[in-house]
Image (cartoon, chains in turn red, brown):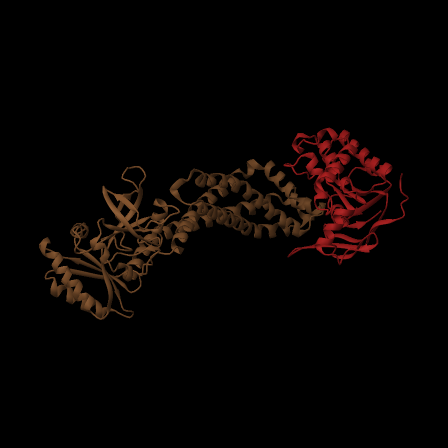
Length: 230
Length: 400
């Protein structure tokens, strides 16, 4: 089931990201080169403020680099319009956040359906069907009508993972997905991500502070002061 | 997406309750004022049924002259006025002259029995009044010498009175009854709206006023003095007015005379009627501006509270335009909830037949108020929607 990690899904070349305020210039990323291959499970580690989340935002096309090139499926995205980038995010990328980012006023099912709302050509019936399938994968079929506030942290993160899966993206970007969970729930989520990677071949890039979790992934990228050190 | 918006707003119904209430109240006020404006506008567009240009109202107060002498003097005055070159036609009229604000009401029926009567405005008018006011005759004729020999007093009906009393048939030659008296219908004129441009049409009857008529004195002294309407030649002005005044007071010693063009009376009446309407409209505008500012503030605040949700939606594939559309869409959905309730309230007016206003007036006001509220809320949402679209997703996602 596992794909051979040879096809590049995402390539970052000579990426620099500088935050400029009136008085201070902060270099968040400095000449980062990175390629993510299809089917890989890559973890990114580093101390707080080293640029991990910035890197993930750039990989997720949520931000633009100050210089350098980002390629998705070997196509540079720098000339893409806002609408084209949004479409690309919707089709190719799934996001999992540390704080889940679920919409509290929507049920579990409605939350999971969210990415497909922005994909043309998918009707309500198919959306619902795919949401149920995604929730089944994360073991939350019995919680479809619940609201996020009625769920535990681990369950919320499972919902977030189901939401990332529903669009069948080429890559899932997870920003400290176990950061808000206790060790038991953290292990559950890690096991879920590993299962998705190993059994379904989902490409995953995960930012983590946890060495033990990082060791479970195939490749570890270390950042320090905005530079890639390993 | 529409279903998603409805789900979202419904799930946030407690948070949106005040907004929905505000929109409901704004709609009800707009509907009320809209109904008033539509009603008045429809009346304004309806023909008055007469021509008031070049028509002057002459009011004569005979003062202390004995009543027995008044009729003879008035006859002389009328003959003298008719001989003035600038005067085309003149005729007597009761005190409820057009645009005067005076009215005289009665009930008439087709039978002597009570119960089948309709309420009408009653006017007493002289033989030449059709020429003075340019009245067109829909059926039959206006009063003339033939009526001197009539066995029953002649009467004319307005079109709406005819339709109420003699639907689908001619009224000419028919008998009608008023206060025990029996009258013969000699003609029908189009709807007559002497109460003014904004007044609703009301059925009217016209009774003959003639110096030979024994009821003349009664009709004319109902309110002290006599009234004449005079059609003058185009271009006639102050010189003719002075001449008429001089001629009248030369014959009627001690008589007091007032001459006012009907156009001037119409303008004065319109101003009087419009003043409270304008005040009401201004109050409504003030309210709408307040509602708009309130909506704008709430939306602005909501956008700031929902930055992380907006960031999330951008990450899930929403473009800036989609976010902007969602903000406008959400407020339109909230507006729809408010309007559904508001329309439910407004629908009671035509259903219950309140105020006797036609259903069309209420329906037009509903459409106008609905359109206005939608436009208002969409405009209020435009700037906050742009703010939302400008939120940087990477920054917003890190803020929580």
